Structure formats: C-alpha cells, structure tokens
Length: 239
Image (tube, rainbow, N blue to C red):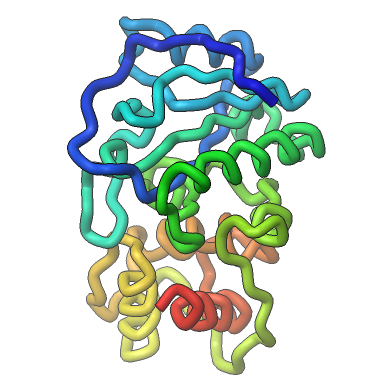
C-alpha cells in the first residue's frame, strides 16, 4: 500500500542510520485526533508512520529524519532512542480509552510496512521493540494485546515459547541471588536496569514491560517460571 503523505513539522536531523523499529499505539479516542496531534507543531511529537485500524497508512516524517516519538527512553545503554529508531504509531485507544485488539487489516498493513522498511535499513529482529520496552516506567504501548507472535511469524521480531523453568515466583519485595540474576538477564537483553539484588518498583516495571511484549500469559510484573524461561531463551536467540 502506498502511504498517504501527511507531513509533520516535528523532526530534526539524524546523526546515524536507524537500526531499530519502535512500535506504539496512539492512545487517543480516534485516529483522526492522533494524526492531528502528530502534525501539530505545538505538540512537538511525531512518528514516521501511522497505521489506521482499517490498514490505511500515513507517512509523516521521512525515514532519514529523526522523528520525536520515544521521549525519555533507553535501550542497551543508549538514550537517543529517537535518533536510532523509526517510529510507527498504530491507531488504538489504548488502556485509557478502551484498549482493544488490533484488527487483522491493521496488522497486515504493518507487516508489509515493516518489510519495506527493513529492505532499506539494517534492523535486526532483536531491535524491533515496543515503546514500553524502552520506557518501562512511563509507557505501556502497544501493550499486551499486540500480536508480537504474528509479527514474528511473518519474519519480523523475536518470539519464542520454551517450556517453563522450575523455581519460585519472584516479585516486588523479594531479594537475593535469584533477583540479581533476573535483573542481570534483563539488563543484558537491553532494559535499563541495574542488578541490585532487590526486587523494587523499577524491576517490577521492567518485568511487566517484558511480559507485555514477550510473555503475555501474565502482565503483573511477577517473574514466574514461564517469564524467566522466555527471557533466557531470547537472550540466547539475540546473542
């Protein structure tokens, strides 16, 4: 599908080629409202593309320019996420306005768009991420209803379903070697987390972000065996 040109003034220059795709939901009542905001010079936010629920595709910022979609964020120790990513907004009201499943037509259009983008830029599967991955304390999008498994089955992104590992659940308030190992694994994968050995609120936010993307059987920030097994399998796959 040829994108509809809907230029946004909210961008600046890149200093490096993009090597990450960052997926968002709009979190607004309508797609029309989201498109207006992404093009509003006063709002100072934008993305490279917006995908409507019916699959209609809008191009807002050229891929070679730095759109303003990530905000305060980090991945693998790098904080200029806008500078290294291409941002795609998916129309969905989000958790605040009636979060719902992403329609088949929208996901089909997204898969085609991601394939086109990856044909132009070197973007590894491990760097196709959620906004919540790079800003776990602030963001929940595109959320636990987004079909990351469908995207991965089409050849884009990581998705693994290993058998659950034995062991106790780890949750906020816990402490010890098990917590430190969990934190170290999350940090090695890319999340901005320090291995303190204490399962604090920041650790819970990161575990919850990981679950929204990779372990959608639960999204409560409790690291059960299935969550930990997926994390270890993904670490091996991303190596």
